[in-house]
Image (cartoon, rainbow, N blue to C red; front, top):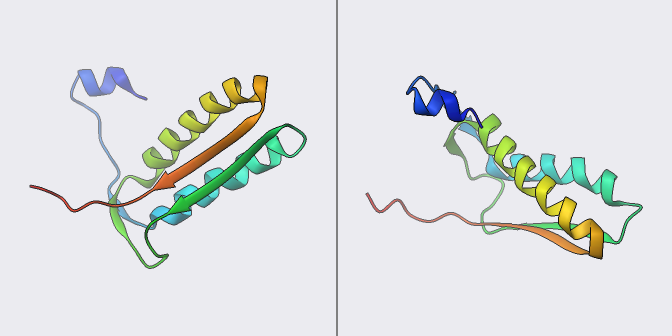
Length: 94
């Protein structure tokens, strides 16, 4: 994920208000279609309501989730099983 930009310190995040549940549901909608004809099940759970908003780069969050689920799918599809996204929010300690 743009490792060269991060190392050169020219990485720019597009910070904006976004709803984290939407990022999760969009990833889920992509992979549910791919997994319908396989032994892999896909689910999600988040410990926050749909009204919860965050400030950050929604596209980067989705890219990270997409990469994680894609990698998990490669391994789980060989043996069958379940891929589950569980998300929660914690208080900022600083």
